[in-house]
Amino acid sequence: MRTNSESKFSFLLIGLGLGAIGGLMAALLARKETRDLLRERGTKTLDYLNQEGKKLRVASEGIVAKGKELISQRCCSVDTSTDNESHQEERREHLSG
Image (cartoon, rainbow, N blue to C red; front, side):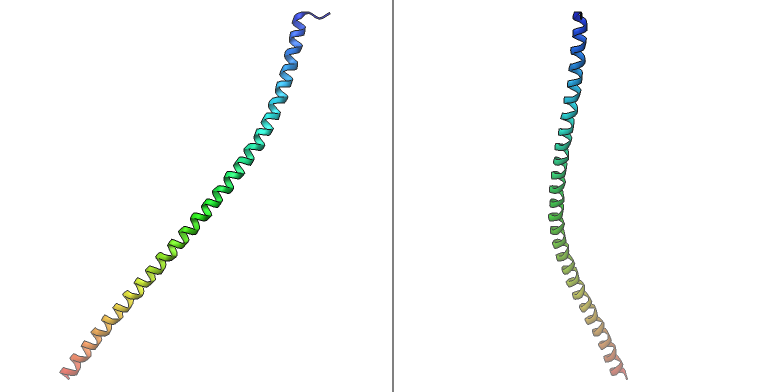
C-alpha cells in the first residue's frame, strides 16, 4: 500500500507535468500573438513612414523648384550685369577711339 507521502509526491509530479505542459501551450499561444502584434505594428509603421516620406518628397520638390527659380533669376541678373559692363566698355572704347 501507498503511504500518504508517496501519494502527495505522485500528485506533485502530475501537477508539475500538467503545469509544464500548460506553460508550454501558453507560451506557444503568446508567441503567436506576439508575432501577430509585431507584424501589425510593423505594417502600421511602414504605412506611416511611407506617408511621411511622400510628404517629405512633396516638400523637397517644392524647395528644389524654388531653388531653381532663384538660381535662374540670379543667373539672369548676373548675365544682365555682365552685359551692362561690356556695353559700358564698348561705349568707352567708342568715345575714346
